[in-house]
Amino acid sequence: MAYTIVKSDGTVLTTIADGTINTTSTSLGLPGRNYAGYGQSLDTNFVHMVENFADNAPPSNPLRGQLWFNTNNSTLYVCPTDGESNSLAWLALTATSSGGNTTFGAVNVTGNLAAGNLTATNSISANAAALNFITISSNANIGNANITYAEVGNLITQYIATANPANVAQTGQLNGTWIANGGGTANSVAGTAFYVTGGNLVISNTGGQGLKTDNLMYANGANIFGGGAAYSNANVAAYLPVYAGNILAATVQMANLTTGANTTAGNITGNWTLTAGSRLQATYADLAERFASDTEYDPGTVVQLGGAAEITAVKYELSDDVFGVISNSAAYLMNAGAGSDKTHPPVAVSGRVEVKVTGKVNKGDRLVSAGNGIARAAKTGEATAFNTIGRSLTDKITDGEGFVEAIVMIR
Image 1 (cartoon, rainbow, N blue to C red):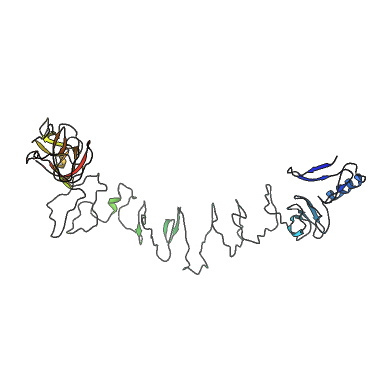
Image 2: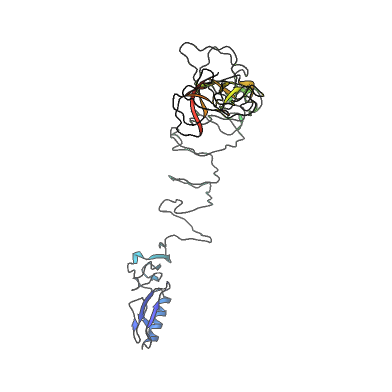
């Protein structure tokens, strides 16, 4: 019965017929069943394995992972692929003679590695070596080294230069967030952490905060802003060289005057006049005034005078009592301090405003009351000087309730 020989990875290497010996599949002689020279072949195989096929050339028919001791340089090699006959392609493991080479790719040493000298013929980078702890003696000389993107946890040094120490014009770059913790004395200034002995300290960071300090700032040894306490958000105004009260100036020129947000209130006091050619422009399009209401009303509601307060929603269709429309965003709001939108909603006195309507409306239609705080398009002969709310500036093609933009006047 023939022998089937299977490799370690499960693949079939060869099949050996009875009474024969296979010398072509591996570097060993593999005898089949009832082969006459079985013992001699087995003993020879043992000897070759013990000596790792010691010879001046690789063994024939090698298998991946097979060892070969090269007698030319007394070095142990490993076969990289099945059948590799080129000795230069084999991986050198170790050398017993001086000056031998090891070419076994990447080597992971989990214990201690002791060497009289460690020489790197190529650059050492994160891809080539990860050195977590390095101690450099005081007499170490690192010459012409190019260290790129190195992570140094703690660096103790007395001198950092971008080039030759005499070349102060050589430009360098410092990235990241750095904290200088000083406490020594430089140029008779105690507690110095950073000292510029020559040149200018230039801060060019568009959108940044410039030179920021939470302590005192000095020029030529004198406190720039005076005072004796450290800066804080609460007291920084006291250090500004400007009177903290009113700004007394005949003319103040600026692109924007703001309270900080459109929801933040501000005040203008005094009698102001727009000079010739100047304009006061607004985003919105109606002039409104606050009136007390008997309940809270949505923008666009048609109101009349009356109810428990000053205004209430118009009650009847074609009512002559219509007064105005609740504004959504007035360009100018009069009586602004009377109350809130809930208690004193703004009523459009004049201008464009959205109006609640029911039914279809054509652009140009006169709007009259439909009752219950809603308007509609007036039919022929219905509009009068008393019941007309305004005229529509937009079309509405649906039959239900909605909104149109209209030009209105208080009635």
